[in-house]
Length: 217
Image (cartoon, rainbow, N blue to C red; front, side, top):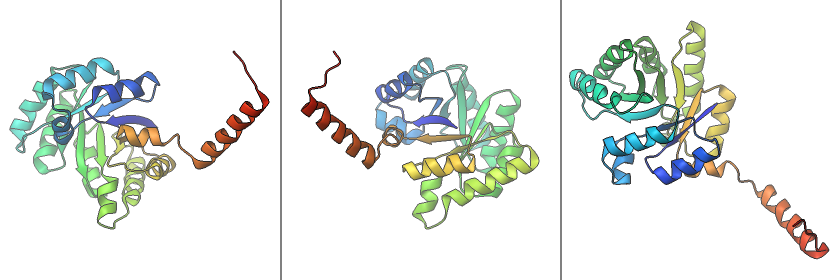
C-alpha cells in the first residue's frame, strides 16, 4: 500500500520522505491556508521534493474554469495530480483532463456510486473520506470495501486513495481491505510506530543495559 502525506508543510514532508515513507502528497485549500504559502509556490516546492504524485486542488466549481485551473496547475511539474470535487462539473473536468493524459484525483467521495462514476470518467485516484463518514455514524471502511469490490469486478484502474485517515486502525483496516493508497497527516503516519509493549520492552532493556554496564562504543 502506498503512503501519501496529507499536508503542505515542507519540513514534515521532508522528514518522512528521507525515511522512504512518502509515495506522494495530497494538499487542499485548507492545508494551503494553514501553511501560509502561495499555492503555486508551495506546490512547486513539494513537487521538487518528492517523486510521486502531488495532488493540487482547483478552486473553481464550474467545469470550464476547473479545466483551465487544472491546466495551470499541470504546468508546475510532471508529477501533479489535479484534484477536483465529486460533482457533475468535477466529473466533466476529470474526463477532459484525463483524456489529455493528466493524473486526476476526484475528491470528496462518500458513496460507492460516486466512485463508480469517477472511474468511468477516467479518474486516476478516487478519494473516499473515511473519518467524515465515521463522524456521522456511518462505516467509512464499508465504503472502501464496496469500492474495492466494484473496481475489481469490472477491472477499473482507478486507484482507491483512502482519505480522512485519523487513526492507526484506519490504516490497518485499509491495508486489509486492499486500498491502493492512504493519505494521512504526518502525525498519524508517525504514530504507526507506537505500541505500549514496545515502550515497555525498551524500558526493560535500557534498565538491564544500565545495571550490567553494557557498552558497544
